Length: 244
Length: 76
Ligand code: SF4
Ligand code: SF4
Ligand code: SF4
Figure 1 (cartoon, chains in turn cyan, orange):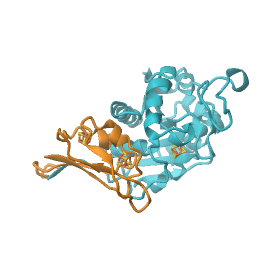
Figure 2 (cartoon, rainbow over the protein chains, first blue to last red):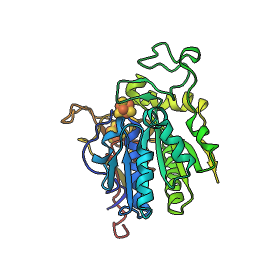
Figure 3 (tube, chains in turn purple, cyan):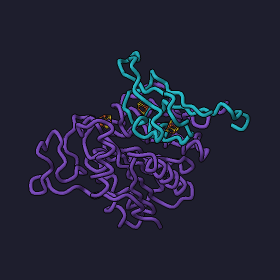
Figure 4 (cartoon, rainbow over the protein chains, first blue to last red):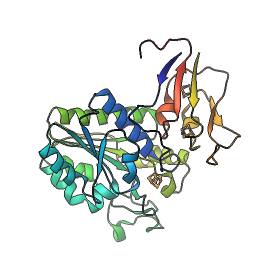
């Protein structure tokens, strides 16, 4: 008997608090697999966000700390500068990275901090009740824009990956998704790349992962992954945005 | 023969493994688990499990293991 697939030992056993079908669980597993494969478990330090992933440290068997809302990249900067021997990464949602933490995000990227940023984008504030986020797409309905985001009233979705890509300190940005097996495989490849860049001292790397939030998209998990395929990635195409 | 093992107490019944199994070998169980979820269940079908891993790759709970009964575990 041979196990051809089993959970990474770095992913701890408790049942997560995430809703059924939520993309966070998939990304958590991918991060663990990459850290295991790169053999950096003892050197890695994660910074969890505020948002649905606030309890990430309960699920990972490597060093993890927590930052105030929006500040993981500022905390990561301090840690990495004091301990350049560590592999430091942030795990952030769109509310954390692209709303309250936009300043910290932009400046860490612009300084070219040698960090890895895992940015899980579901276009909505999950933890606080499904309100509109800066990344909510035009026409997308949330609890604070019930008829859909309107460009006149609410402005346009913030294209944070494209914004960061123009900064000289940024070496790598890729947008991926976790809505189907092929995209999950590509997401893992991108995460690995973002870690290898840091090991090689190349500068700031970010992977934006389009992730399903069935609960606040008011869809079943199946419908939510189809929405990514048929709607979201038409607006925000997947692929490498910057690679130098 | 390749088969999958689902941790039914971890399963949240999201149905993503059911959706993405190309052979249709996963269904919703008729029996509730302890947390009140109808978990996924591996069934025999016309075709056999190919070990393609689609189900395990999509499972947000990492509740699926894939086992090859014919190969031995000596390598890993
Ligand atoms: S609210 Fe959305 S993002 Fe948060 S755990 Fe539930 S499905 Fe996931
Ligand atoms: S490994 Fe592939 S064929 Fe086997 S149950 Fe999973 S998805 Fe279906
Ligand atoms: S993907 Fe995982 S959690 Fe979802 S139904 Fe299948 S086994 Fe259960």
